Length: 497
Ligand code: ADP
Ligand code: MG
Image (cartoon, rainbow, N blue to C red; front, side, top):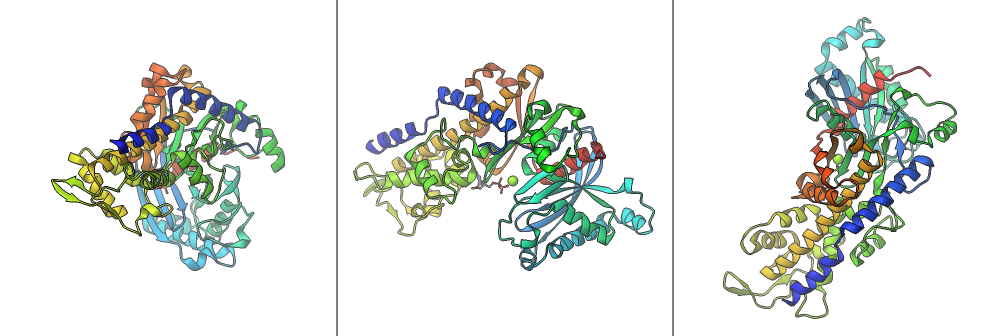
C-alpha cells in the first residue's frame, strides 16, 4: 500500500487540470498572435505560401518526391476528384557517398536520375512523347518536393538550405535554393517536370486530410504527434502582419496567390512557451530538459511527443525505484506473489531503466492498453524490454498509474494547441464543422489519445459542448498525397511576378 500511495503522489504531479488547460489556451493564442506580427518569436508561425486547401474534388496526375534522412521516394498520385486517389511509388536508399559529396550537383543529379527512371517505368507514354519534343510546357508534371532539412522558405517553390542534419554534409549546398538545385538537374536530363512546391510534413498532412476528409469540408489544422509535434493551419492573410517585413527582406513581393485571402502557417508549436509560463514542470521534466541536447528549447514538444514520453516515464520509474525507503520503493519486492510462487524481483544491472532514452514510447501504449489479469502483459513487457524479472502486481499497478498520467497529460497539452488554433481562428463560429487532420505514431497507437484530447476540449471555455462539432481524422501519407496536392495548388495559384 505504501508504494501505491507514493505512486499516487507522483501521479498528482502530472495532473493538468481544467484550469491549467484554459490558462494554456490563452497563452497559446497570445503566442500565435505574437508570431504572426513579428519575426524571431517563440512560436515561429512561418508562412508557407500555400494559400488554399483542397476539398476533394481536385483531379489530375502529380509527382511527389521525399528526401528524408535515409531514402529517396518518388511517387505519382492520380487524384480521382471524389476524395479518392491512387498512388505508384519507388524508394531507393541514398548512397552514403552522396550524403557527403563535394558538390550539390552529385546529390541532386542522383535525385533527378531517380525521377527519370520512375517516369520511364510508370509514365512511359508521356516520357516518350516528351523525348520526341511534342510535350508542351503546360503539360509538364508538377512536382511537390518534401525536403526534411531546415530551410528558410521564401516562396512556394523556393527555400534556402540553412544547414544539413541526419548525417548529410555538402558544404557547397548551404544557402542555396533546394528547389532550384533539383530543377537544374531535371532540366539537364530534359524531363517534363516542374518543381512546383517545397513541402513541410505538417502542411502535407493538412492537405492530405483536406482532400480525403468525408464531404467537401476543408480542413483547418494538420498536426503531427510522432517523434516530434508540430501543426500547420489555415490563417487569414490579413492577420499575418509580418508578411510585409518578410517580403521586404527578400527584396520584393513573393510569388503567391493572395486572392484567396488565406495563408497556411507552419506554427512550429513545439516551441510553445519555452519560457515555461504555463507549461507543467515536474522534477522529471526538469531533469529531462537539463540533460537534453537543447536545454530550454522545444519545451512543449518535450512534454508531448513520442521522442520524450518514454524518457519522462523512465525518470519517474527510476526515482520510485531508488526511493530511500525500501518499503516504498518500486521493483524491490523480496517476496512477491506471482501465481502463488514466491519470487524476488530483480532489475538487471544493464537494464534500460538506467539508460537515458532507455524506454520507447511504444512501451507506454502497451501498458496503457493492458487489461490482463494481474497486469500479466505489463509484467512480461517489463521483463522483455527492461530486464526486470518478477515484478509484483503492485509494481505493475504503480507503473500503469504513471504511464496513464504521462500519456493523459500529453493528450491534454495537445488539446491546448489544437483548441488554441480552433478558438483563435474563430472557426466554430464560422463553420458547421471544424476538421483536424492528424498523423504520427503517438496519436495513431496510444490508446485513448483522441478521447483525452476531446475530454480536454469540453473543458475549454469557448468550446465546451461544441466539441461535438470538431472532427479529428487520421491523415496518412502526407509526404506523398500532401506534396502532390501542394504541387496542384501551387500550379493553380501560379502568377508571374
Ligand atoms: P516520424 O515522427 O519520424 O514521422 P512516427 O510518426 O512513427 O515517425 O513517430 C515515431 C515516434 O513514435 C517515436 O518517438 C516512437 O517512440 C513513437 N512510437 C512508436 N510506436 C508507438 C506506439 N505504439 N505508441 C506510442 N508511440 C509510439
Ligand atoms: Mg511522420
